[in-house]
Length: 366
Image (cartoon, rainbow, N blue to C red; front, side, top):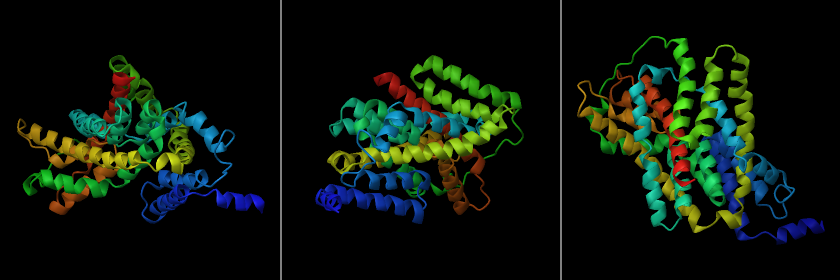
């Protein structure tokens, strides 16, 4: 009884606010279905981390131990990349290889946000960690933030996954602002037919070697992603591929989310820097979308067969949500306009682009 009263007396307003934040994250995950696989563990972990005298954190606390074992060592994000790689079918991209260019163009938000963060007083490595929110790739954001600014890991993770969930709200206004109705109604062909199996097998191996040679700092990120894809495509490890997609992905996602929450204690999270990070994360997503759309419009100046510029917005790594958003927008403009497969091609390219972008940031500032 005495311990209970002592715990109540130790509550301060910041912990109360963070308990409310944790409940809001849980509500968003369950009621709104916003990235529930991550926001629910993060929300519940926030509750565990902000109760006074919590045995979940501290030197012998399980969340702290998991953080040191899985986040500080960068193990959890890399294991997630194996799962993501096993889930992704690169066939749409292999049928339209030039779509990979959009995956590069849509990383504009990263570098705009880095510049904005430095103007707000963050040092260069902190700014890079905030800018990588624009990769629209949670594991990449966690990986880079843990390397350069572990004290900002909580708000960066929340911003990255929250804005990924809000892609259907963020992207359409930006796209409509930058395109005309005529442009949004452009139809695109999609090359049907199967990609040869040997091409699917060679692709992850080739991408790993090329990326490793030119951007060695990206080799862990891109290598684990491509290893997962090789499990999928090799044809002789179906059980491992399914385990990576399901058991591995689910278990590590749970551990990743609830462990990140150990950094979301009131004293560390409730600072002006958190508000700036949330604001800059939104800027990153807006400029990512704008960069992809404007690149498509630029290409249309030189191409006889025009590209629907909306697909450029899929160059962010919010896969496959962004592709579905663009397809839905196209259907509203013209019910006979089917952009799903071209959009998926760009979206898959964005996954590769975001990982390489993270590697470049590591290489330039590491």
